[in-house]
Length: 185
Picture 1 (cartoon, rainbow, N blue to C red):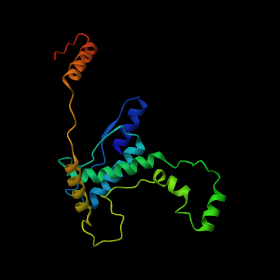
Picture 2 (cartoon, rainbow, N blue to C red):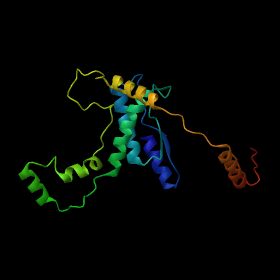
Picture 3 (cartoon, rainbow, N blue to C red):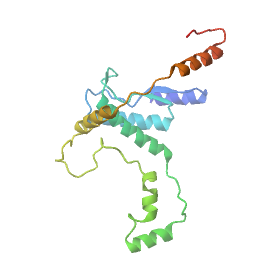
């Protein structure tokens, strides 16, 4: 509540806002971590907090879990979708369309549904289990999150740094902007 109230004050003053929210005091990626992180992320989104520090954090901000970070990415995706709200489609009023599709039994497979489904829903990644197979390998949240961390680490490619010319040009821009505060590169 304090973070959301601070955001309201910041918005009233025209300032950007930041909060440690969307984190958990749990020591593990468990139900408590999911509850605390999800509640915080949704509140931060609805309160309009500009910068959220918390995804991946556990145990009173003293630990960062990569597994929790990929899980929190899913929570952030759901919070972002929540903020988008319900968007009317181009085919309003749609009563006649629904009657026709229900009569034909093609509501879920219709061109209209297929065209709008991904835009209307947030489809979580592999960390969230939407299957009915509880005996499947990697059936715990921690197993799925650890697998996703491993997959992301295996695909990681370091970004290409600035070229010498780009670095010198950046230095010139910074010197021009610095005025009396000269920076030497």
